[in-house]
Amino acid sequence: MQLDGSTWRGPAVALFDAPIRGMGPLDDLRSSGEHRLGALTGVERIRLAWGVQPSIEAAPSVRAVVAERLPASVVQDGRDLLALNGCCTLLPAVQRAIADLGPGEAIMQGGTVVAARCTANELRDHVSGAGSLGSRSTAFDGPALASTPWSTLDLLPATLAHDLELLIGHGSASAGGRRADLGDHPVQIAPSATICPGVIIDASQGSVVVAEGATVRPGAILVGPCAVLAGAWIAERAVIKANSVIGPRCKVGGEVGSVIVHGNSNKVHDGHLGDCLVGEWVNIGAGATGSNLLNTYGEVTTRLEPSSSVERTGRIFYGGIVADHAKVGIMAAITTGSSFGTGAMIACDRPPACVDRFAWLTPERMARYRWDRFEQTMR
Image (cartoon, one colour):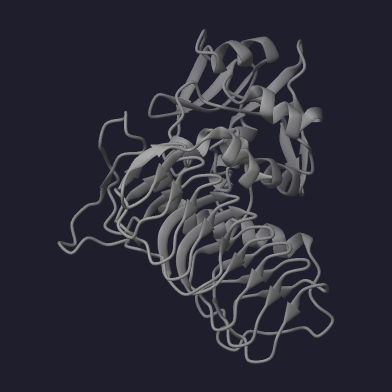
């Protein structure tokens, strides 16, 4: 197997979900290969870096919804595959190790498969928890997997820098050739993007990409490394700090830093979010602010869902996660390390640190979000 420039020369590529997944409610509606670990999802990263469309072997819990969304990407039986963990960073050192894999060999990290040469049937058994991959394995010592929200943030500077290189290498700059107001790192503005007067682009610490159809309104500040992806809208006087990814068709204002917003989500008004992951179709109301630092400056612990145990993040800065379709009301004070579940409706100013999926939370009570009302809102 080898990479010839940016073209993959080898077996078919499949992204798979590990038998034990670690992203909490962010795993509810997507395969690991659809997580945005930097500026790109795993599917997008493979397509851009290697020039191939990967297939997906999703966890049984999300297999149907993934097949509906990506019908052409389901793994076909009998194929010889290069199987990649969907949480693989695909950083250069990882790619070199992958290129050296022979049939039946695997790369491991902490007991988890990073990549393996296998058959489609072996991969399907592994994802279902019924088998292992690779008769011969090698441990990989380096940043290979972003399999939890906090490890995703730990690796974000490296994965984002790598993704920005890919985007800049495959994109086209605007006709105006916009340069940074500060710094010498590359700045790429897509021809169809709109950069209004008074926007400040600071590329002193990293590159800045503004993708197709995105709009950056007057007075906004973009601090690299950061990416504003296709169709996103950045509000007037917004501050998009370093290591931030504003996903496709998102609307973002206020102050955000070291965040990944997956897509189609709104946080357009004043308020701060830092060191956190936000899913798709999320709405965060005016003035809502998330804490990413304890008053004690200690390590942040978190609980991804009410039934799970408390986990150590190893991070001093960690804001938490807001899962798909969650709605957070105005002026909410979001506790450090919070986890808001899929479809949660939060209409109180001091929500608990862990809110269950489809919770209906008001100052008076916590109930279950009625499905008919949720579906109406979703549509």
